[in-house]
Each structure stands twice: as C-alpha cells, then as structure tokens.
Length: 573
Ligand code: ATP
Image 1 (spheres, rainbow, N blue to C red):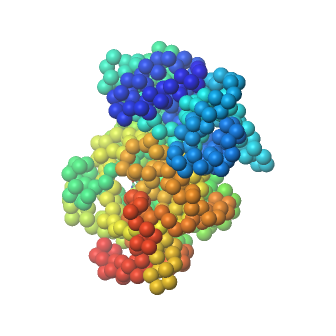
Image 2: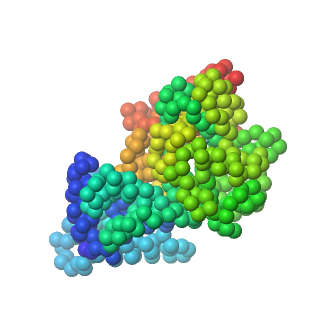
Image 3: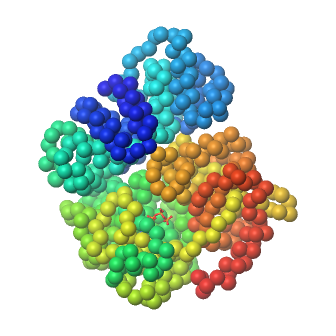
C-alpha cells in the first residue's frame, strides 16, 4: 500500500478529537488495507511488531534531527532552531521537506512495505557504525517522503504519533467493519486480542472472512500477555463496597511483577512491560521447577527482595537493578535475593483460566504451589467481609514493609491489560513535594530513546545548593497518545528537559535544575544513596509546575520536618 494513503489516514484521524469519528474514519481505512498488508495495523499504533515483541524503533530525537538535516539539506542548527519554534519534530520535518520539494522534483514512491522494512532493521543494529547505519535507513525513507509523509515518519520514529488511536479504537473499528452486532463483536474481539496479544493477527483472520477461527484462538505459552491492573480504593469501606462481600484481600507486595510461563522444561519470565527477563533470575526458574506442579502454565506474581540475614523485606528500589543487569547475575542473586509471591493463574495444563472466577483460580494456585518462604509462596490472602479484620491485615502488610493491600472480587475473570474495578489497591495516603529534576537515565526496550527515570532534588536553604532525594519513573505515561490519568509521557518530559542537558555519560544525564515537578510519596527514609541524606519511598510524578522556579521548591529543612513528623505517624506503629 502507498504510504501516502496511510499518512492521509493519520491526518484525518489526528484532526478529530471525537472517538466515534475516529472509529468511523478508521473503519473506512480498514476496508482498504489488503489482507497481505496486515502489518499496517502495527503502524497505526506507531509500532512495527506486536505488543509482546520486544523489538522497538527506539530512535532518539537527536538522531531524528540528524536525519531530517541530511534528508532536507538543512544544517542541524537550523533543524534545532525550527524545533524550538514549532515544538514538534514531525512538523519540522514537514516544513523542511516542503521547502526542499520546491527546489527539487525528484522523488521515489514510498510504500508501507518499504517503511516497515527499513524500520524493522533498526532494532537489530548493534556494534560499530550503528548510528551511521540507522541514519542511512531513515534518510532513505525521508528523502522519498512528501511533506505529510515526512511528518508521520518522524513522529513514528520518535514514538509519538499523536493521532489518538489506541488498540481499543482499532478493536471497535473492526467491530463496525466486520460485524453486525457491534457490542457482541467487541467482546469477541477483545477475547481474541487478549489471547494472541497481537491485534494484527486478529485483523488478518477477519480479513480472510474466517471469523470462526476467532473461537479457537488460545493463549500461547512463551508469548506474554498483558497483565491485569487495579483501580484505587479510598479506604477499607470503599474497597468492600466496590468489590463486594466477602472478598479476597491480599498483601500488595512492593516488588515487581513477574509473569511466569512454563511449557515442559522451558520456563520464561516476563516483566509487566512484557520484557523477557528469564536470564536475570536463575533462582526463580529453579523454584518454579521444584515447587510448582504442572506441565504447562502461566502464573502472575510479584517478586520481592529481602535481606538474607535479617529476613526483612526490602523496598523495590533496592532490588530494581536485578531486572536490567545482564552480567554478574550469580553475584547479584546472592546479594539481592527475591521471593516470588504468586497471586494469579492465567493458564493451566492446556487450558485458559482467563474466564474462571478468581476464587477458583486462587484455589488452583493453592493446590499446585508448595509454599517455600523466601523462595516461592502463595500471596498472603484472607477472605473476609469484616472491616476490622481487613484493617488488621492492612496494618500487618505495612508492618511487613509492603505497600498496602489489594481487594479482589472472588467471581471476577482475568482481564488482560485492563485497569479493572474488581481488583482494587489501597495504600497509605500520599504526601506532596515540589522538586526539581537534576538528572535522568535513558530507558531500555520500549522506552529506549528517552529518559525513563528522573533524579529529583530539593533545595538546601542554608547553602542554596540542590540536593538529590530520589528517582521517579511512575506517574508518567508511555506515549503521548495514551489515555489514563497521567498527563505527560516519557518522550514529552525528555524533550522538555533536553535543552538543559549538561552532560551525558553512558545512560545517565546531568540536567540543569530548571524543570520543577510535583511528586507524591508515602514515606521519607534515611538514605546514604543521595546527597540530601534522604530518599523518598514510592515517589510518583503528579504534575509539571511551570509556575514554580527552582527557588520555590521544597527545602531540606521542610523535608527533615516531614521526616520527623512521620515517625509519630500511626501507620507504622
Ligand atoms: P502501583 O504504582 O500502585 O503499583 P501500578 O500502576 O504500578 O500501581 P496497579 O495495577 O495499579 O499497578 O497496582 C497493582 C500492582 O501491584 C500490580 O501491577 C503488581 O505488580 C502489584 N502487586 C503486588 N501485590 C499484588 C497482589 N497481591 N495482587 C495483584 N497485584 C499485586
């Protein structure tokens, strides 16, 4: 298919904020996509592979600037200047391509196949000369592009398509295009998407007219599925009211999610972002082999760090390095051991458990997992209707250094990728600080190309210096077009900070204190890791504070006061 057709669609969809109109426009476009071009569905989402695949485009704005400069014959400084004026690198590419077009007439025709072919070469490039090779693949596309194509090519490259099309928009458009009963179709399609985690393959089935095939789709071991997420409960009463009585209440463990797949002798571990971390956790593989019965299964769990000597649980931040580290794995396993807390099962011995009620799933877990504390255990759970009992359990969870509790409806099915109302989380109330960003770290996988964690600093009122107090990576969304409560994406925040980059070393960046953000946290701890002497527990980004200057931020004195105050707080008593 011609890329110009796709660009035309992007433009139309991006020009309306109304969801129903987007669905209408998209359902027309879906009719035009030939069956053999099903991979265009990935491009609609700004991707090149299905969600479960780890390969991402991951091009930084800096590289995109170089490519625009080369393709349009504009000096890099000129591109940068335009970028500062316009604020959207895609629009910059559009403008400069327009200018160049007036000067030259020569142009090749760009197809979606060619775009995918070049983009798909990007993630696998490694080693010497990578940057040059990437650049030439991108420049080849940009020199063939007309202005509007250049706009969307660049936005795709930097992972910021801005057309407001999500997986659910495509699902609903497919329902309109291929079915008469839309409501029924949406359910069916969602089920197919959940099981394959690949909306393009679902589209292909519809396009070939073999709709019955949707019914026989099954989960595949080794292919990660999106995990189910929770909404918030305000308090215990609210929790019971919303999930119903009696319900299951579990510890909300402060670790990281592990989706564990087993097929005979093969065991694969995925994170919440569906990254394969099998190699990083050899001990977990061993626990699964030894303490979980079954030939094949997918279980959902939270891995929590603990101290080998004191047996106390550690906050997530202290073990987070185990997820990324690719070397010294044995040593790290010794220093930062984890316990796997299993709380759900999605598939067992050849059968999907997605539609089984939670009560049944949890019973099955009890049968198949042999509890081995500090190795693998069934998540601590009570089933109750009693508020007092729930409150006692909640305090115990906090006392055991965990984040809080989860309320779970015993009848609920497992809904991959949804933030559902029948699983609620409850944590202690959060407090606020205004802090300035003074550093950052580039992400990996889906987040490569932009900063995915940000160093926060407060102000030392006696010296006027900025002192580090923590790192934040939550409260920020993956993409600008994603819905949800968060109002800024990693990409947007990185671009806001880029003009203030002072020094880049490997994956870390030092940043001039300019951008002030509001952050909530649950607790302040003493910490040798930051030069303020304190660290925030569970920091979460809530808003940019363009109205505040770095001089107005929270001071060390105020933070000390909060620290002293919280010691008297009931919640850890
Ligand atoms: P938060 O920052 O509060 O963890 P989140 O957006 O990361 O929020 P939520 O779905 O809102 O994720 O909260 C649920 C998360 O809590 C899960 O992703 C999981 O990693 C973790 N968790 C810990 N213990 C449990 C449990 N017993 N059941 C379900 N999830 C649990």
